[in-house]
Image (cartoon, helix red, strand yellow):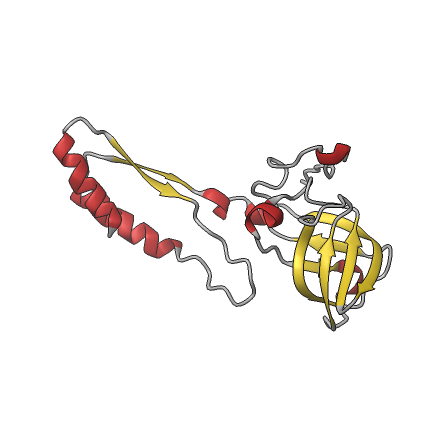
Amino acid sequence: MVYTQMASLAEAFGRIESLDIGGGLGVPVRPDDAPFDLAAVGTGLAEVKAAYPQFALWMEPGRYLVAEAGVLLARVTQTKRKGLVNYVGIDAGMNSLIRPALYEAWHEIVNLSRLDEPGATMVQVVGPICESSDVLGANRRLPECREGDVILIAQTGAYGAAMASRYNLREPAVEMVLP
């Protein structure tokens, strides 16, 4: 395990008190992703701590703690077909959720207005920013969307609002905390 190697190297220096073992603990984003095995990580860290009790272990939990605590809600403003591609335009864009544009991050997208309908159409879910990177979801299978439908973009609790901006003078989505 890398943590054991790091602790072994740190012993050679003599003055190190803590080990930053990184972080960015993930969350499954696609339906077929395996859940993160926190118990296995805990077991591995307990082994390192038992072998090297002199070191405090630091870890950044990343999206694991808060990704699922937030969603982005948007309304469908338009639908169009250009060539073979179907577009669903929504009133939230990359200024409210930049992760798909920056990292090609995948967020589940659901049409809340049509939950009981099958995802029959492959679409590109795009925002109003008029930039080629303003794509919140590429190649998503959704029910037939109509103007006014409410779209939910999942797992935006980590880095959604923190990375939002007023890009192109557009206000980011309003942030609300529900009890």
